Image (cartoon, rainbow, N blue to C red; front, top):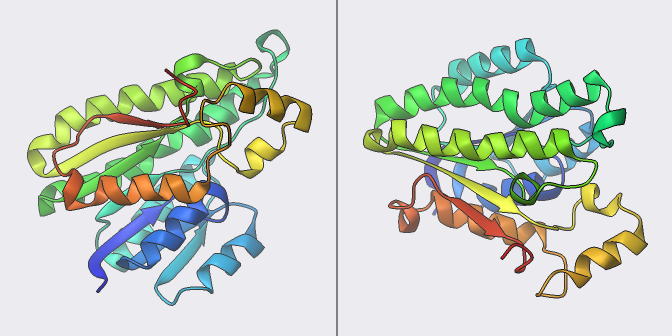
Length: 242
């Protein structure tokens, strides 16, 4: 039986977000997700489930984020489970990095979580129940060549998660982060094969992770089995960060 919860996921049209949407659609009454340009991917996911709804939103656009958050509250009344999943990279060594590359990556990966989290966590606090998961990355802990913007944003997500957990813990709301390593997503597959082989060589598990394995972890963290887990970053990387 589906739980009577409303779930909101950013970037649910592909990769890890898509896996979480599909998993949660089987568990919860209403699942909402955002997409930006991948309308075909969004339709494919949305049309597979009668309880899944999707909205276009450019997460680098503050006005669109604010307006969508207001629309979701007006339409659905609340959000019980928030997954700040959407991620974006635009790589360059720092000395060659343009300001726009820095700004857009920070806006999508870090700044956008402010708008949705503030709007929805306020109602979670009033209801005395809520679950927030923020997707960070192994890059936020190890750094990554050519990804200073991405690593900085993802490290910021970790600090945000800890701070918000302190503030909302007494209100029945848990806030945790998931830090994936090398997962089979479009972002990973853009890396040339010869470099991907090198990455696998540094993973004790000897393989890349599957998006569905991250969905497994997200499913656990929002469940009552994890209600005493708060302010934590859970790494899922096959042992590559030890």
